[in-house]
Length: 258
Image (cartoon, rainbow, N blue to C red):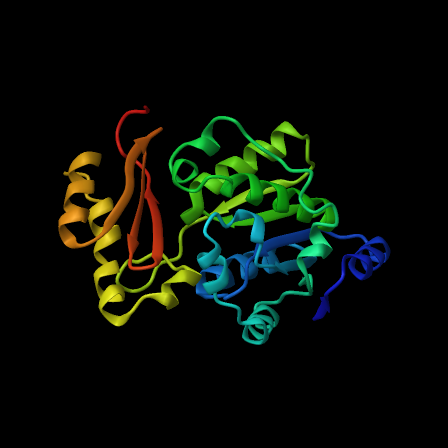
């Protein structure tokens, strides 16, 4: 497995890479079994698999969240290699991906302002910008994203279509812990008591006997700080906080479209 820390080195290598389908999994590191499922799927469906590891500063609206985000590069590389990854793009600095200082950016003016976008100003603008940069650099045949971040997935699919990117954007089912909690790099920051309580989040959110407002009330009574619970286009979305950790999740088949 080859690791590239500079864009110049990667671009030189990419230009000389022999033809074949390329699968791409962009990550912010702190890899877990959910990432592994994406990487393995890519490796099984493509001649080459590329992963990126980059904690993207422009999608953090909270500086403390950026500072506390887990960084575990060596274990990440070992996991990536065990999943069949051929190449890892791991830019060594912000300047590698933002030589313009983030003067140029990608925005969407509807769905990105709802749900998480309403609570994290600028988050999706930073996410879409870095994903477009990475897609341009890797030029994959297929790119893989987890459905836990369903709003992110939908925005990336929309961006690819809007900008005529010749890339198949593939959504993959949410990977969950044994107690149902969606796997996330942020879960490692939960205190033991918070981690136990966190398992109630998906159980309450997925309860089809509760309306969205009732689910929000039940989550609040259980000890969560609720950002939102909302049914949209037949899918229920939710975001809550436990201490300094923000958790998101979503479930499909929630009645009529809205």
